[in-house]
Length: 186
Image (cartoon, rainbow, N blue to C red; front, side, top):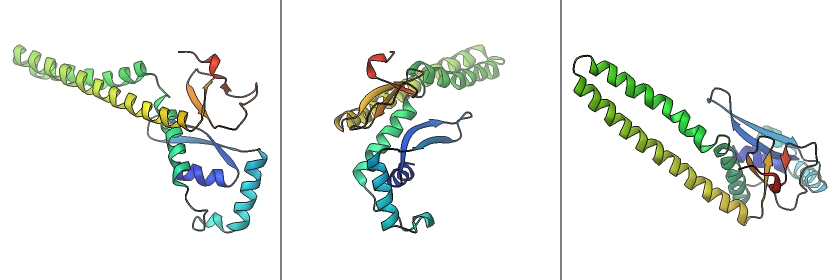
């Protein structure tokens, strides 16, 4: 995905957002035309150098640092789509379903076995959920540090989700989906 967004940025578009689709089976990336003079000049130069770029083979050379920064933006956008509490609740539903099914299935014949299995599964799933959330927080911190070191500005969208805006660009105007960092809600 970051490679696709990077190529789009080389030809006059700007990455805005990445989020999980409604049923959780697909990702939706939002790319918008970049109206800045710098983007227009870069797009014109790339179309002149790579006139057959539409075939997907003759593309501008890969920029590993830019791709990594874009990947960090995409990962933070995905990780911040849901709050930690929401992600924990999403994980609790299947864990609770498995625990209750174990309890009902094995508790009919022997209540002790059913209770031991249910308690064991509660401990197992609690540990698994805590480890998953800690791993997610660690990744989020890593990507956040990378973006802040690259000079990105923290902004919030209309839902209060933290986003990172590229350095050297003006913050969007009043009709935008993004707001300055002083309007962030925690």
